[in-house]
View (tube, rainbow, N blue to C red):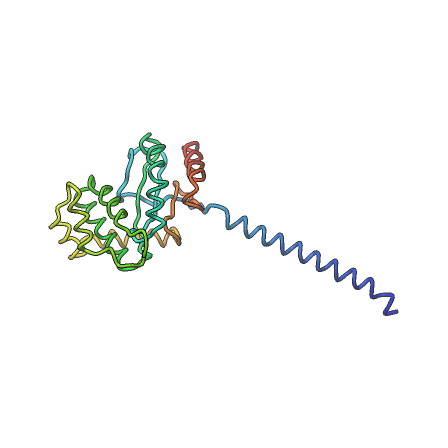
Length: 225
């Protein structure tokens, strides 16, 4: 009897293994598709009080969560940002805002505090300072300590409209640390894990260097508006 039932048992076992394998593949595929979906929130990050480029009435808002110590943020600013500004901000379709992220510790905090201090002193000088500070980020040895008060003042000295003494005083007294902390609250609220993180209205772009994905999100948002 055993020898007669063995083939049947073998077929049952093989069938069960195949079914289990199919189920596992379905679960894996579903998991991968979920991870590849862009995360969408019910609201966009608020930009009141944040440095913002473009027409205040532009129908779509893009927010970059960035860190002055982040090499990818510097690369994004060099390779993606200019085209984005030309295509959408300068044409009045989009306004662009920057929110500080402090993933690299004290230097990130110092750079963010300095940028907030410049913005509060003279909003028109902010973006020049922003770009100039990123430009000072070394191409190699990213972990070296380069964001210092001296470097910040050196950058500020090259930009018109920044009062050096007022900037130094604001940094030393942590005058605008509340603004930096507000940004950190937004980083936590919107579950930002990587820099740069790019959000188009309430949609977080999976790959910030995929310009097509950014433009698709913009066009969808424009249609909704």
